[in-house]
Length: 461
Image (cartoon, rainbow, N blue to C red; front, side, top):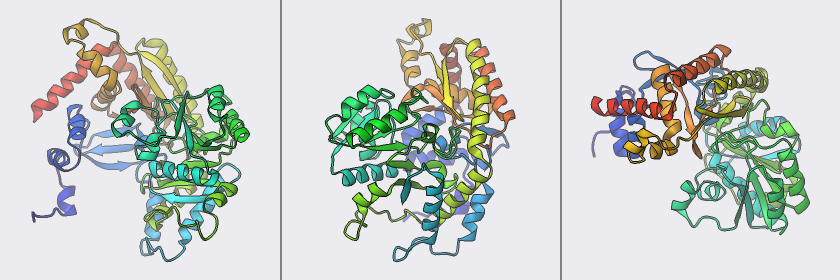
């Protein structure tokens, strides 16, 4: 057996060593993509909304772990909570974990009225899987309805109700009893449920990976009423929108909607521990898993472990104590208004939309052009799938700002900074984007600038 690496040796890796080992033992394609765009910095420190690389450069994190860092990096209260229980049993299945019971209580206190029973797992995709299973066993029905352009995860069940062909096609056949409808269309929803064979309608209050798509006002309220009419469970996916991100503790509370099942993950772990969870009404839970015969039909070995539970308890405490939903609303309104001024100045920006500190900035897709003709359509091909990455690469390498594109719409960069971010840092982003678009007013120029980064990365090796 070859020599095993120690933690001390691993922490001393330089960028090239990390890149080589990642390429050989983890994911070579992803390693190549990040290195070409010069994204694979050697980050060595993180605190709040900031990270630092090994050269002492400071970056502002506007990506926020895809919505997992509402509290920012390494929040001291979360770390302190874990320290308090580090000598307790972490995984002990032959007992009831008081930390699981306590966190479940606290989740019920902050969730929409009527949601009570919690099941803990380890990720957002697992939470979706849990919700789908609960809907089936509770209703006795088989069919699920989901929305076009949605994203609920990449495991088989979650992928079956995710609305992008790119991620679904290679793994088909998936779950067959599914129906896809347009997002925000209440008439389509009613038509899909009229057969009365639908176990659950799963929906995001705001589509995150779809490009930060906000539905029409009243959509969730109408969906709630339609589901009630046909005996279908309403499953609301708050994995990315939850815990203050949109200006409410949970986005569905804007319309005073209580789903039958709600999915949570990401920021529940405070950016420290992986946690997923669902919370449901008493009626749905009892029909599904009530009684001795059914109580162990769906379980998770690591779900509800003490370290994760303590992180969740501390996270909720910080969110409530610092009123982060209200902070997100006020900062989000300010940020959105500032960004809208950019749209008036720069023709490259197609749309700016969102709620709270969940904002999408969409660019126009280029049509033809001299550079595109020279490259035989190469520019269009690259920008159609990687435009957001090209913009994000320029923001990272020129302005020390971390962003990324949304998975279902590569023309959109997502802005999901920690909710604790300052107004000064929001202004820094606006100024950086303004400068970038003034110096690179066309997609072709952004692509050309990024190509220099790509060639530079190649020649550095």
